[in-house]
Image (cartoon, rainbow, N blue to C red; front, side, top):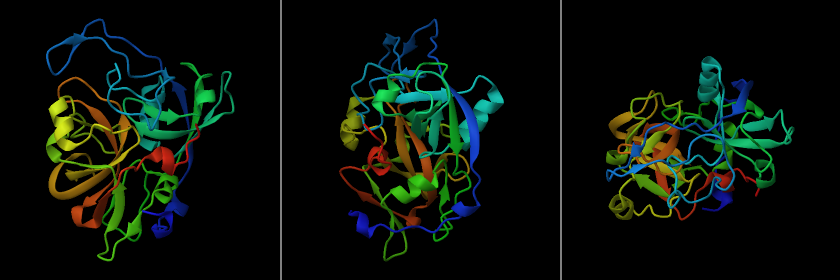
Length: 291
């Protein structure tokens, strides 16, 4: 779909507050015991926390020797209540500034949530970052409403992301959303029952036959997907006739019941959405993230 057909959606963004939230780049930790994958094999793999210097939004989900791979920078806070504020208030598309270390003053963008808030930086900046570096997140977006679609609830979606996506109203009055895939409800795993402002919901893609059957072998981190029969307005759970739109936040998880993480950005009645299958729909392009 060409950019000329996109619609600038009316929102309440002029009433949203912007908060500065302190964060620090996390440090990877390691359990003294093995994890066991879906085939019963013990393993110890990297993936969560820290700075991942060689994977970023736009890279493929599958093929990495990792578990729950978080691309780019994983940010948190050692004080639990500040960590919770960061998780709940940060939104995809928010700007982030480095406030300490060799890369002080550099800027990045929030691209997802998992155990941490995930942030993309240009590669030259990423190479200068280290665990413990301090960040300032300009949190803006929770409470966002799309005024022409009152039945749709947004979650962790900044106005910057909403306006960057090629969204439009169909003649039938639904919101057309380009997606690379539609995920059936039976593959939704860890994260069901959690707050939809918090972290993500895993998609159980631990078996190759499931990936092949659903045609998801080329899935990339940052891809926009639709989740059928999922109600993510006030938590996350199954509900027929509902739909959620999300962004692939992290790589494959190999533990049963886990998988590729998808962060919710919108949810509402299925008739409110018109998912449009396309070859490419990735926030790397929408947010014009630099190389």
